[in-house]
Amino acid sequence: MNNKIKMSRQDRIFHLLNGILMVLCAFCILIPLVNVISSSVSNPSDVLNGRVTLLPVHFSIKSYLYVFKDNSIASGYLHSILYTVLGTLIAVAMTILAAYPLSRKSLKGRKVFLAFFMFTMFFSGGLIPTYIVVKNLHMLDTMWSVIIPNCLSVYNIIIARTFFNEQIPGELYEAAEIDGANDYDVFFRIVLPLSKAIIAVMALFYAVGLWNMYFDAVLYLNSYDKYPLQVILRNIMNNAQIQASMVEATGKVTSTDSLAITESLKYTTIVCASVPMLLLYPFVQKYFTKGVMIGSLKG
Image (tube, rainbow, N blue to C red):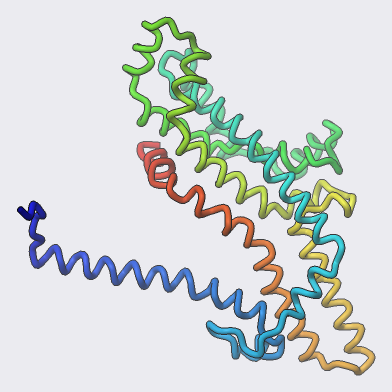
């Protein structure tokens, strides 16, 4: 016996249009990504002249060889991974520890604490006061100078707080307290196991931000051997432009050739900087529906 509900003609048209719209959205996202990857493995002059669309033209990995022959690229990757992993662990822990108490109605002064957090979203100290604080804490030119100032986001606290409010029923807390559980037992044995989705989403948010960190590293780090990948790639591009200009001055290459090399390097650095996050995203994508969508409601 077939128990399937027969769709009406309007429903079939709606699903068809919805499918077409999703395919168009997917193309809008994929085409620029494919273009960047193809441009990074194409001949530089073809890239400069706009001949590359979806497939590579005159396949070439010269730009990758140029980037990876720089010994500092490995150091950049290692430091970016260190800053991202350590910073994400600290940031997620602080966010959860701040959001969970704010979600409990039994917390006295909850609205006052929340108002303090919200105040910082509209009125920040600014660049110079923040730099002075980092300097006075003796964190300049250390990895803590790029991790600590970015380890808490009020926006993420609000999302996590809403998740705790919406997804963990108050009756569960009451049942645990009746069974003799204290606040630590409730948090570590009940709340955390039920919060994997929001923890994964927070981890991705912070990891992407820390991985793409550029300005803070330039501002607070002075030692070249402590630079993250983004700064190393910027330096490689600048060096390539300077070298191309110097060679151009000798007459061995034209200005068009130097522009083509720089343009090709631009796409190569984008791929080098984006691949780790693209590899991470599929593992946490399934949590987005539970984490972000539920956490963003009634924020």
